[in-house]
Amino acid sequence: AILGIGLAAFLALVGNYFYKIKTGAISSALFTKSKVAITANALDAKKIISAAAPYFGAAKPELTVVMFGNFSCHNSQKVSTTFRELMIKYQNKVKFIYRDYPMDDIYPDSSYLSLAGKCANEQKKFWSFYDKIYQAPDSDVKNLASQIGLDGTKFGDCLDKSKYYNDIKNDLTDGFNNGVRGTPTFYFIKKGYESEPVKVEGAMTKDVFEKIIAGLLKNL
Image (cartoon, rainbow, N blue to C red):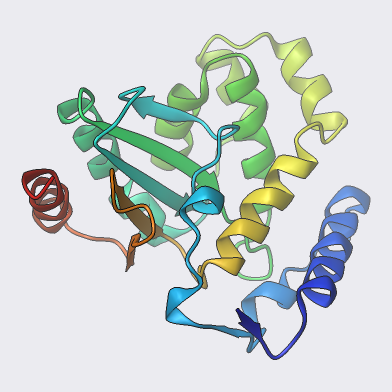
């Protein structure tokens, strides 16, 4: 349950935040400075997992790993390669999902990069975009789009129209309601234990990350 403000009020704040994204007057203070608290049992696996989000791996997974990341965040960048390496290694048993959590007051233009990622996903090139942008987060996204073989006209049109505005809004809302307060934040959702997602915050080392995955798979 959300404490401090009601759900309707929170959603109103979300809507206002994304209005600012669309008009260019972006401020994520509502998310980064809020003192809203959530109880430990508020985690909702159905809201953490999104069918609209880019994923890699098993269609019917034994374990689902969801990353709420920020393309401008140093800690998200630190763990980005590990996330990719493990999704290759465990692709037959695990589904890896990426969701956006931009915070422009801390990381200017992070919401724009989130939009660019979703526009790349529209052309089935999300993971190529992910790799490139985390390697060089200050890259011009339109030049990057050309490097990974995107249709530049479609990509530019997607950006100009803020086509995936609602998807970013949903990522932020679902993340916030499930305790995301910074990036990266990970959720490990084991088959048969969907009511008990495991939440881990911060840039884990590859060793720690893999031990969590292996341990959860072993206990299935």
